[in-house]
Amino acid sequence: MPELLHTLHVDLTSVTADRSYAIQIGRGLIADASIWQPLVEGRGVILVTDNQVGPLYGGAVKAALTDVVPLTEVVLPAGESHKDMTSIQQILDAALADRHERGSLFVALGGGVVGDMTGFAAACFLRGADFVQVPTTLLAQVDSSVGGKTGVNHAMGKNLIGAFHQPQQVVIDLDTLTTLPAREYAAGLAEIIKYGLFLFARNVPGKDYERKRGNLGCNAEKKQNAARYSSSYADRYVCEAL
Ligand SMILES: NC(=O)c1ccc[n+]([C@@H]2O[C@H](COP(=O)([O-])OP(=O)(O)OC[C@H]3O[C@@H](n4cnc5c(N)ncnc54)[C@H](O)[C@@H]3O)[C@@H](O)[C@H]2O)c1
Image (cartoon, rainbow, N blue to C red):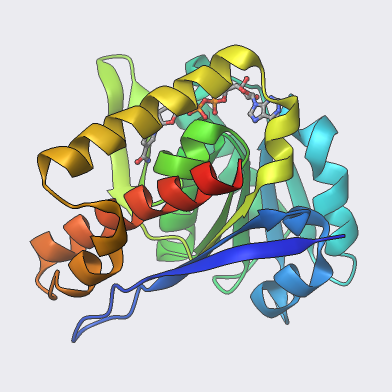
């Protein structure tokens, strides 16, 4: 039985654009058609995953997208070593081959590697298409899926090619963590501890998160800070639910 535990709103409105989005946190969400319906109504979907996450959760997502046409699935090789332009090319080739339009929705089902690459492919596709993050590692749920940083590595260094492109929504299904290897889980916990220290250093005690976020204002730098605080806030709700 799907259970939506929290919905957070990342407010990124400005005079030129509204890139605000919601972060939904719950259990069983990826198989819940009512989560997907408002996101995919009247448009095609490019579902991007990797060859470890796809066999585990790709079927549940596709089953919830039965009426979507065209529905394209791109399964990339898992791991940081494949976070490169070859994978981006593979995503864009598949989207173009199936004649997707700018209104199509990219869906990132996987860890931070899949999320960063899908977001970047969406930013490039026909000069910018929407994308949804469905993070399946703890690290991606509390960090990389939030904030809009997308991209790939280059032989000269990590994350050297990329773009800021905010997701249209983030869907965090805590049930996906049940299959996460212990080492990956520990990596996510380390990130949570880091955020805890960050908030202490900035003197933002727990109950003050909402107020602090509300006071962050609307210039570009403050927007970026708002995204970081929202990520910290997501940390807190994910932690409470675990
Ligand atoms: N965009 C950002 O703001 C941001 C922030 C932090 C990190 N990152 C990026 O995130 C990447 C690291 O992400 P990561 O730690 O999620 O690694 P990852 O995406 O490589 O996932 C780790 C491994 O776990 C597997 N996996 C994922 N979910 C699973 C599940 N539910 N069950 C079983 N296996 C699963 C994956 O297939 C992979 O083999 C790096 O490339 C880093 O640069 C981006």
